[in-house]
Image (cartoon, rainbow, N blue to C red; front, side, top):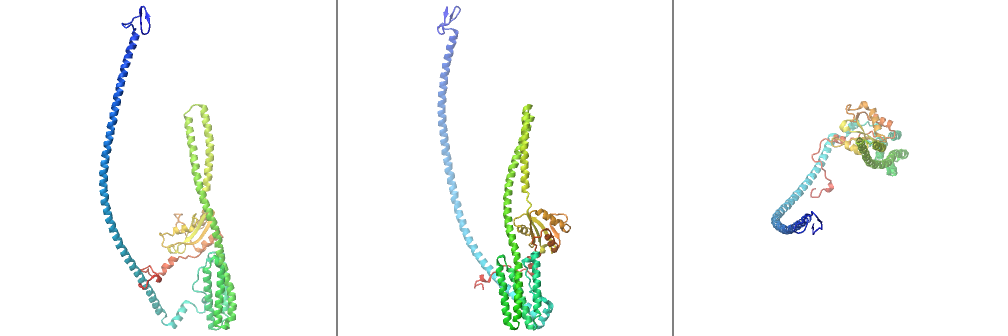
Length: 517
């Protein structure tokens, strides 16, 4: 009976080879041999790989070293070439700088000569203008007043009735601020009527021509002094204005009585009465400044309020942006949930998703209400209504009535009177209102049939009179200030200039050197 010496198996029909091993053990032995051979081959291959890797690293290092050498050489060559170019350009730059300095010196010399020439030209132009004015004055005098006696009678007859009451008033009437306010204008006119009656009453007390002349000259001078004090008065100078009245009345009293003692008693009484009425005129004008000061304080508070409102609008805009983003988030979430509902058949899940949509819609409703509240707060209606005219550009009875929300409404007027118009606008009224659009609409509605442009209603020009506008403004806003005067300063100045002088620039005599003289 055969038996395997390796695994110990045996049997009657069990077969073993010549080495007393069964086929299975023989096969395992062959596999072990093949495994050893494979391991030897793997070890040899790994050795070859290691040798090849070392060779590759050496080749790579040599290649990198060679690349570096080539790069260094190329860099040196490039730097050398660039350095040469820089040196060449620096030399060219130095030459250019030298040329620029020479040109600058030449330009400065020419500029100095030019400036000196301009000074001489302006000086000569100034002298010529003075000589021309003097010559025209002499020419005018020769033409009009050559025969003094006959001419003076003719001129007086043409200009003023010798016995007219107008002789007691000044030739030039200055515009007073109080004339812009109806109530003050009424008080001032009443006081002026009393003054006028007083002047006429005292005029009848003088019987000689000499005394009458002294009286008339004194009255004209007193009226001019009053106008001057009124015109130069300011809010903080009422006491000075009253003292000025007392000073010049005392001065004229002394001059008149020193010239003729026979009229001293009458002049004393006249001066006492006229001084009181003049001080009343000062108080009426001062009331204008009091009102202006009150308005200024109100406007100061208003500007502060408007600054706060601007800050609040900014914060509201930021808050609105956040709310809109939140609103968009909720809407997107609702769209997303609706898509989930469409994609499932699970009744329980659908019910849960629908409940979630209801909650989100409630939140969305709160966000939308918050957004509406913000929009309402952003829509402020406070502003100024302005009434302006431009006599030089449009004529006497054309006015523009508009609205601005600018903190300083004059900025808008200056903007309207830009380079597109030959003259600036005159402001007749600025009316502040908490509901400016409504007030503007009411004004436009009252004057609708007097629109100049009946097609484009955004053109806010109306053909009306200053009286109608004043009455309309006071009817809608009794506390408003209204200026009736169309100054049109640049227009009237332009009409007074006969010709545009060739040399407009005029230099001061103080800046003319002795050499130029």
